[in-house]
Image (cartoon, rainbow, N blue to C red; front, side, top):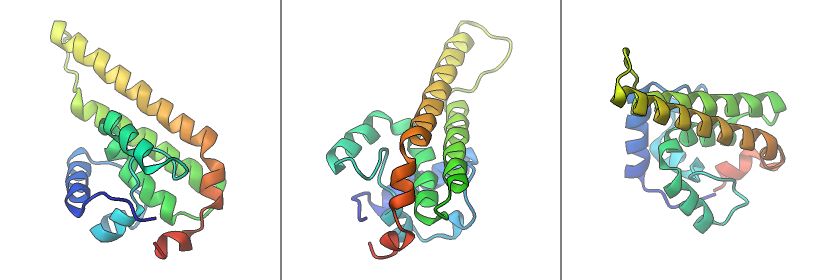
Length: 153
């Protein structure tokens, strides 16, 4: 696969993943940074050009935290619909964790709290939308990509 994210970028994402407490597939935390670097393509399907994925990743930067373990799972999971669905559910859950991390809401709600609540809700809804889009349109790509393709990258 071979994308152009640096090891430092992956390490920064990993540190943030630990801070937020994201959900991962087994083996994620034991995977070397260089291997994760080979799996990670940013946000968007492999079928997109690297330029379009780079732009999408830039625009959707808050969801990189959910994308890294999602790409790991995409590269290593069995090619079953159940594994595919679990990966997308984990993406949705991680997007929600990141949303709450960025926009914590405390009661009672004052003006600032209501603004954070709106931001939290928007980020959660957008993260869920991304997961649904992946579920609706990503199965063919997931099913047809062989795990060996990642090992040879």
